[in-house]
Image (cartoon, rainbow, N blue to C red):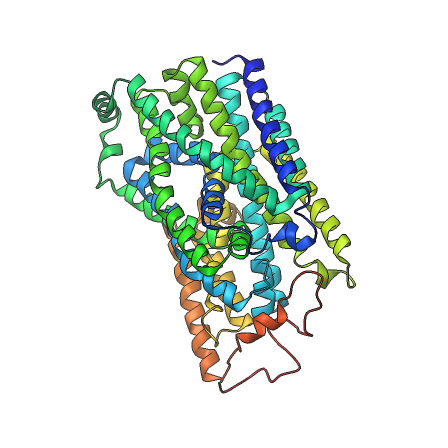
Length: 513
């Protein structure tokens, strides 16, 4: 175990260095709430790719994939990697269209309000904010648990330090500070991941010996036909896909990209890059099981159990730095994303606020998000359980939400009904909510709990009902004019056209076009 004081010192030094970088770079670059929230058109190819990789590779990569690997095996780990890549590949297609339809956009909730109306907007705001807040709490839970294991650092100290330092530069510099720190973090994260994985393999006797140990402990973990692992892998693909499509962090970066071609290329590169990183991290879970290191309730820290067993103190300290960089990269991203989600809606809530009021509101919201996430992180325990709960909320919502980017026929009532029914179906199968509902309704009235059926049911039902809603809209002659998105969504501080979201009283609601 690493000395507690030494681990704290390294952590503070890392946090302080990147805080100073974020503050220094932001000076003079944040002149308006637009700069703070969107950093519009400012990120070139290398910068955008770096911030996408860093933001997608949070501390969770050292925790959740390894936790999956301890009991569900290689196929589930590969599914986790594919699931992390699919949303990035999809954004490479959706991103340019979002920029074209909403060139002055900032958030997915803006889109939901302009395309559908206030009720869908409120629902999407609730789901997206809940997902990102849980994601943020899970990140802080992971780093506090990890440092507690390898260096006996108190959970409150880790959560407080990370939250305070990251808050300083995100509340000061907004998205611009997050992007520049992400760029430097990526240059450090990738080599540290490679060195950590290669060092573990060498320290534990090479791939042959590790393979034999895992095979002896549980051969199913290496079986490509392991049914439970295959089902879990497919579940993770659906869960992560839904969640990431409602992650405001990626919508922010769509507008921060310098142009559509850069956006498409950067998301595609990120999709390719994340798979080997997630899989490599997940293999630590198999190794931990093979070595017999995983005790009761320790699956979520399997990566760090291997590190603690295999590495001398100085290498473990480098992993502490890696974990700190990873948690910073996603924490600042999520601080910004959550505050921007609401900031973009402030002009509708306040009576014609000026730009100074909007910027102050964004910073105060960032502080509120930071304090709340630290509090939740201190009470949470399982990172994977937190993620799955958040994923279910989004899995039932992303198809109805995004259908409006292409279909002129879907209406607010249709997509809202599709999302709510999909969530209800998913909740009936989801283990935690299934147990709660069984207590209220009686177990005989509910199906057996199943994560696979929960996510398949949520996505399939919401998608099917969205298609039905589009058919009904077509039969009734409904036709949304996409150019209204450009007119209704304006830059912060500019006055939008008079609109009621999905309905514009200055034009007929129904068109034959």
